[in-house]
Length: 231
Image 1 (cartoon, rainbow, N blue to C red):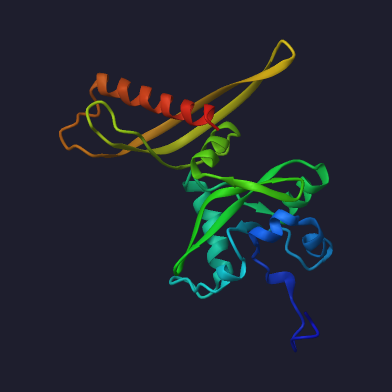
Image 2 (cartoon, one colour; image 1 turned 45 degrees about the horizontal axis):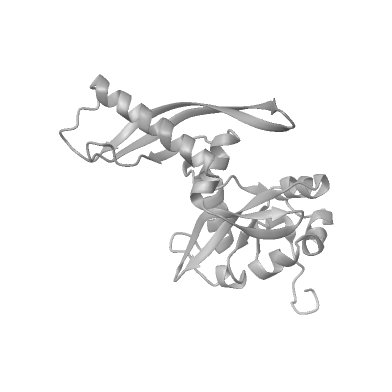
């Protein structure tokens, strides 16, 4: 790099590293080792993977900020806490730990759409190679099970009364207990959820009616359970 530009690269300001799909399927370790070893590299630098070529991500100029890297950094930092479909971000420290432990992991997935950058779902890795993509629903299930749900909106399916309800998560706590069943383990997942109803599609729907409260709670229970079981 230094043989082609007249300035010394400064890695202190590195916000995000974006890996393209083709390179990610070949393996990341060889290409990111330099960053791990460089003492100037910020350990809080986030690492993501994108569909297609990484170059296309940085060709997009966000409308709200001048730096594409800062834009992605803000999306990962703030939106992962409020959106269930965005997986918790992984920084250089976390990624290096996963490499050393040789464990599977997931990175936030970027997709370019015309002049915008979309963060939904995740790339699933084994060792240092991309295996495939997780949908936003699968990411949501992982966050529920691994106790990573902080806040955010939860959109319920239509109730029998043809009512669409949106809830705002206030607090969530998940606990996973392994149970030995013969020669294999099954997992008992307990999720405690505190929420507020933020939107109701029908004005005449009485939310505080006990029958409606029971319907809403049962619908939330069923939806989260089905989401986790299908992942």
